[in-house]
Each structure stands twice: as C-alpha cells, then as structure tokens.
Image: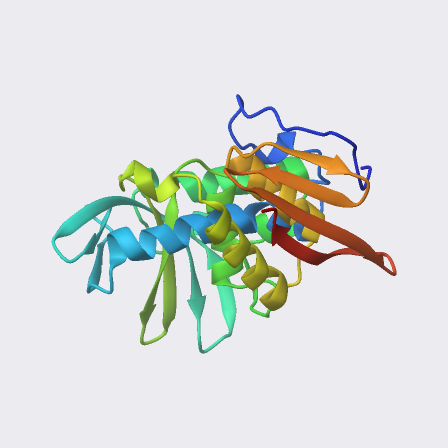
Length: 244
C-alpha cells in the first residue's frame, strides 16, 4: 500500500466496505483503524439523538433494546465477565439465545475466518487494552451497515449489543468541525494508523479528498488540510487545519 497518492479521490458512489479499502484485512490494527472514525461519529450521534442519558433495558426474547419508551431491534455481540476478565463472543451462544439475534456476530465470525483475524474467530479470550468489548464492537459494527452499539453493565460484567432502526440522521456525514474533533480525540487517545483512519473516515463520510505530497486536502464546504510526517516506521498527523 502506497503511503501518499497525488490527487487521489475516493469513489463516493460506493458504500463503505472494509474489504474494498485497500488495507491489510488480516491486520487487526489496520481493520480497527479503518472502523474507528466511522463508529465514533455514529456513536456520538446515537448518544445525542437516541440514548440521551435515558434508562436502558434489554429483552433478549423479544430481541429489542429500549431507551426510555423507544424500542430498537438488537443483535447480541458478546459479553465481558469481571470474574474471569474475559470476552465471550455471542456466536458461542452459551445462553441459548434465538439465532435471529446472533446474525451480526455470526457475520463477524465469517469475516474473521475470511480475513484470518483470530480475535474474531476465537470464542473466548482475556480482555486487555486492545481486545475488549468496546473495540470488538467497533469492528463488528464498523464492518456492518447502519448499526450502533451499546454497553450494558451488570453485576457480573457487561453485555454488548448492536442495534438498528434508529433515525437516518445518526448515520449522516459529519461537518468539518466534528470531523476534526473526532479525529483529534481518536489519535490522541487510541493507537491507530493515522492515514488509514483518516482516509477510511473520509470515505464513509462521502468527502472527496486529494493528496499533495504529504498533505491530504479534504473537500468539505471549507477545505481541510491534514499534514502527515514520518516518525520512524510510523506515519502520523502533524498538522490539521481548515483553509480560509
């Protein structure tokens, strides 16, 4: 994969698809980097427009999650257990849940088998800073279409569910200010491939861009210049600013 391309523009007629991004789909680091921007934008909008700090409730037999009086169809992703400090994928289905609420988890496993991504195909493993419910849900929903996710804490740990049926505005493109805010927060707090993160986020956002040497110019209503630099083997953002 080339690091910098001159005058590159994404084909925005196509929907975001993890296996058409030109990344190494066998690398957790690259797949996670590609999913993170999209999901942070979706999760932020979902928190503001759907969850809104309301009480939550899950009914697995009905297959719904509720926030206040509103119900949304759910898919069970998996769970974290405090006592064993482990993650367990929903597709292992030790609870005997209806198969209809395991389809997203099963699809994630299928993609994991195709991409040879061990974290997506190993039923149970120890939690750490890289492999935990949030990051696994980010990849699960990031590789899917129009899903949010929610962490539901309980006495023994937490469940993670994906859910759909929310307003389309939750999945709407973000403006330049929100793009900068999400990008800055993510690269400061999470270890990601900056270039893959930015290009994938722009592709999902349907924002055209081009490269001029080591500067990516994203064409929002106001152009955004993102300058990259080499730091050893790592390529990182060194400047991000709008163009007046």
